[in-house]
Length: 238
Image 1 (cartoon, rainbow, N blue to C red):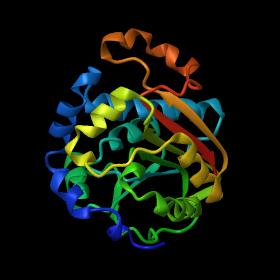
Image 2 (image 1 turned 90 degrees about the vertical axis):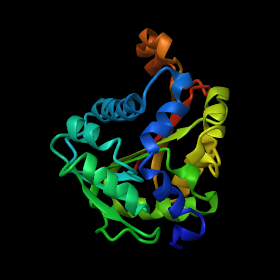
Image 3 (image 1 turned 180 degrees about the vertical axis):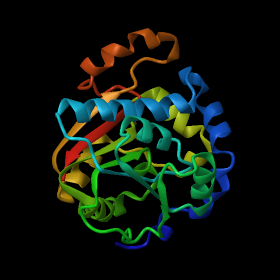
Image 4 (image 1 turned 45 degrees about the horizontal axis):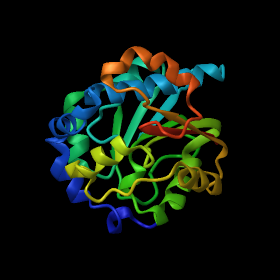
């Protein structure tokens, strides 16, 4: 896999690492929620999907594009028996994550080429809003590498922003660290995963109700086929 330095500005992510939380909080104020909420609900939804398939507890979980570690405490809480690994191209982001959540995960920097871990190491791979920062021409190679790392029959869950949703488009367009982001249609992400060898790739939509309407959120699990949610995620098997 070609190194991502040509298509991802690592310095850009290093620059925003120390101010990420404050910047993100200001940017998503329109949603009526905090960055902590968005980090938590993704892991809760992934846990629900894992349980719905009556899977045994995963022994190892990979957080691909872990950034400053927002997902790490929720991965540790909701998958308490799993060893957690986080990888990212931004050294500074990983330093911030290690300071925020010491001992929660093994944090690994990589240059965008092959991830230096054995194949089949993970029962569950998670990625949250990472791929819109990476040139779409690179997605196939990255998914092939992640497919290599996933155990046979394991699960991968990828969350992304939904370009169909106008609120999402506005938030991304006004976010400093999304300046170079290119939002991905769900069909394109699904196609890249399928071509990389993932099986049974399913798309589900989420994020229908903002903070003031949070009482309605239990309905969202019945709305996953409606392609208008603020975000979507794919669930795929290795």
